Length: 109
Ligand code: SF4
Image (tube, rainbow, N blue to C red):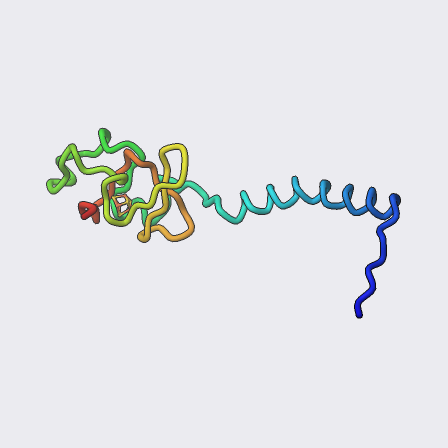
């Protein structure tokens, strides 16, 4: 038969304080685990693929396949995260801008 020991008031207060103190720490760690760095337009892969944060700034003369309705947020590689940014399989570990664009854009099915 199992015996249950009663928690003293002091033990209860200590345990509660420790639990409350860990909440902000877990919140910070969780945020870091989910947030990715936003890609820079000067990143070598971004330059090679003509990536820009704002599709309206695409140089159509340099990118003849570009169409005005092509945006990262309607590309098959894009998964929205927050604030108009999202992850992209072409840039692992980075976020790209929803209104952005690059040369490997493919419509999301
Ligand atoms: S592959 Fe798609 S989502 Fe990724 S940067 Fe290019 S256009 Fe944007």
